[in-house]
Image (tube, rainbow over all chains, first blue to last red; front, side):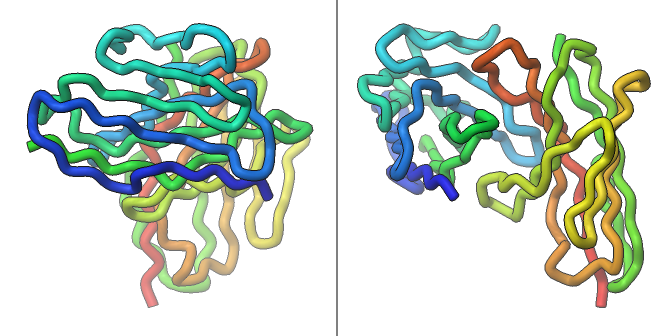
Length: 115
Length: 111
């Protein structure tokens, strides 16, 4: 099946720093990727839809200036958490849309801890 | 507002038992329906898609009732390895659209 990777798998940073997370589709091209966030004991929540070559579409309540998304190629989308704060600590998961049924394939997730 | 509601459990069942989960969704325009499985601190993995005609994959059977906006999952002859959180997921349709996840139902299979 299709493989999606994320890097890094975990990161610990100080409050105020920016963190970049990469999402790659390894064996297929994805014009659309999605970024989700999951807090402990909560459901995955869609943050934004990343479209190759155009601006991302953000869900209500997600600050586009804080969570910068760049989808510069058909196999790579990046999410940058700018000026991270402890409340941004979460499990960030990307997915890439592909296949005949436009199935979403998930990356392994990035666990962000902001001190 | 898109919502998917599930009983969070936990469901504690003995190995070999049959267990059923269900969920309801609020967006009547939803087009695609799925059950995902998520293990602790891991990404969700697709278990099966759900169709109106019902579908079966080994010990797993999924049903969709569009009129009632209700989705079910049945697991027969449960195994210890079935212990996980099962996520009910819908897609709003209309082209590229993110998935809406339920909070999940936690299943614990006991030996």
